[in-house]
Length: 133
Image (tube, rainbow, N blue to C red):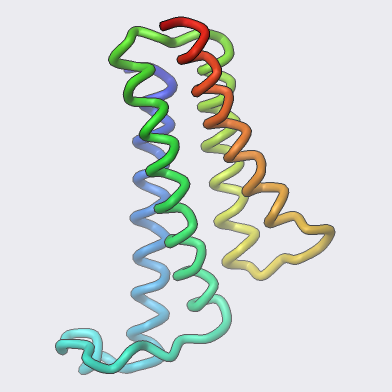
């Protein structure tokens, strides 16, 4: 399997881990009865739990965009140095983004820089796709 698709797989695992973190925080804040119930009342999680939810929603959006470029590249047989570099930058940036966001680190706009790294990663795959199809 290509590096581009492996990055998608690892991105899916990261999404699952962020969802678990968020769910854990919600159940901790709202109680087990809320967790196994219908959850008609929205969770009132704060701190790292709320950040985990925002991180997974952001990651979901970015993973979808990544998949929209990585899957067609794979189907078209495009796996170049540029697309591989893009896949590597994407997954590393997204892992760093998740860690920085959930931990609440705000020094020097680091979260935004990590987000931008992910965008650059999938942009490189898109460029490789355009160059080779």
